[in-house]
Image 1: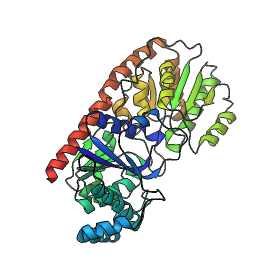
Image 2 (image 1 turned 90 degrees about the vertical axis):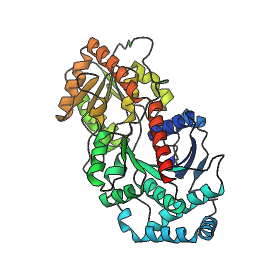
Image 3 (image 1 turned 180 degrees about the vertical axis):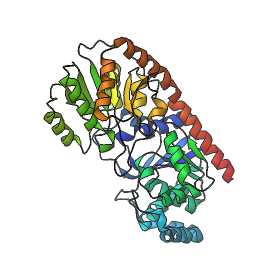
Image 4 (image 1 turned 90 degrees about the horizontal axis):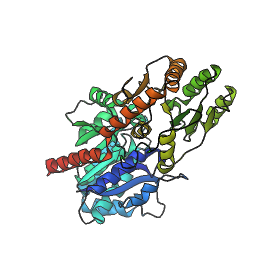
Length: 410
């Protein structure tokens, strides 16, 4: 089996779930080729990127020939070339919202991918196209499918799902062999929008359980440590976490809150931390790789992540950092947003806040900081529950989906 992955950018630190998925697919024998619309210009790269065997082609490479792929495809398959371009230009419902590409930009990207698939087959020709994210990658995957007749699927996650027009989601799903998503709440949303009989599959993002495990030695922090990890963007709710920390500090509760991650709201959040007089309590450490975060997860007493739905509809599915923290045996405090309640079960392997804002978050944190025995109990349950989300199992499910679509198209 050989699968072409269409991505918005590669390799993204905040999209390690895509990296893990590709690595697990390769471990079970799937050949992968990566087509990224752009190179992620980030200073930090996960060390596992070096383990990926898949060749990567960046469509924004200024040295790539732009006209030749069109000439090659138009000559080899003039009817497909013309009908696909007409399809992209005619169907305005495919565009808008979070999709940034115009019809001609999407068609151009699809032509360059299709041309490469036909011009440079690997030891096995590509039998399936899979796009990560429902916005531009899924649109381009659809057009590659029309140019090549290779079946395609896409995974819908968060903003890409909720910030494209319903008509665009429906049109992309109509042409797909399957739509994949990462939590049941997303699944229900897609089913409410998509009117075609396209299979919609729930496959949770997996975590590498060979790496993320509880530490061999018990936690022994003199001062209890609350850990949070994520991009510093509005939907992650870090401002609510800071207000909860201010309530804990006002009650003279000893703790440190260590926040790892970067993003456009970092300056605003650091200013809020200072306004709340939390400089001695809360520390921002910037982005870190998984290898650097592993011992941080293992040492933390509590993991807190408090996402919310923003006014424009953006939200999380299930943040992968929850899986990572749970696999390390760290009790979790989170919110009832997206698919989080599907993974964190209140009172069994963590604590969930359903409304109540900072006061409710502070109450949950206080409960755990006061009770080491309960932290150990919930942490052990979290580690046991994380075994359901092994990355290997998720890859097996995806490979079966790819195989089924290829056979159905044969």
